[in-house]
Amino acid sequence: MIHVDESDPTEELEPSFPHRPIEIHNEKKPSDFYDISTEELGRGKYGTVYLCRERSSNLELAAKFVPCPKREDRRNMEREIDIMRTLQHPRLIQIYDAFDDGHTITIILELILGGELFERVIGDDFELTERACTVFMRQICDGVDFIHSNNIVHLDLKPENILCLTKTGNRIKIIDFGLARHLTPDKKLQVLFGTPEFAAPEVVNFDQIGFFTDMWSVGVICYVLLSGLSPFMGDNDVETMTNVTLGKYDFNDATFDAVSADAKDFITKLLVSASGNRLTAQEALQHPWLRHSAHNIELPATKTKLKRYVIKKRWIKAVYTIIALQRMGAKIDLDLL
Image (cartoon, rainbow, N blue to C red):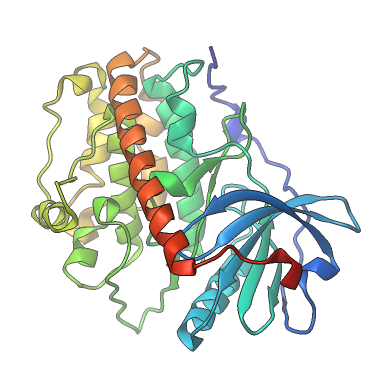
């Protein structure tokens, strides 16, 4: 049985590699510096990730290939790279290198092999307790606080974007800054993207967003982690977005009987429809639940429901992967990169 070491994440984490300036190489190819494996680490709507190794250092990394057939695609990737240059922090995935051959942008990233957080906690050898949940939530809030301190909003915080650094440790990494945006005080920012289940009301209503938008998503993640239930999930995206707009949820399910009042208070102060009244990341880190009050009692009912939740997500992801493959038409030919 894996017991979470509560003190471990608060210690200073050695980076996978020293900080380095990132420039996009236009006249060089990834294969000039890296051995790209045929081993696929992941595939998403926008690109495919492969295991790779830098020849000069023998460092194992991840290479993400993103086709950019349109100018807008290229601008989006350039923005993501620019944001990741800024975000040097142990709770956030780190960028190592970048290439643009005119058709595909490739980013070389820190290798993270621990898998998704929720996949970890549903494992038979993992002891899921409320206290274990606080260990993960503290790290998430720590990472989000750093993102916000750089005037950036992530805008796609969800369980799939919270990875474990290793298969046995308890350190997490926030990934995927493809939807992240810089915030400027004199400019109103509105977006209409993200994952409906974790999107804040102001996103659904196309109102002004801010740092508070990410904190709503943190609240939803916490709710799911503690219960295995999704507070606003409907039968389809339209129903889900309607539920988010209404902002109605409760703790009536029996799984919450074993959850402390402080944990529920933490969620309640994040899932606030009035965006300005939500906890900031710094305030969340000071909440009693994250500091010292979590129970160390196992949550078997939560784990059972969380397993069902994850299995359903796997099925949906498999469907989207098939659709993505059909859209791409064929696998990227690595010999051309």
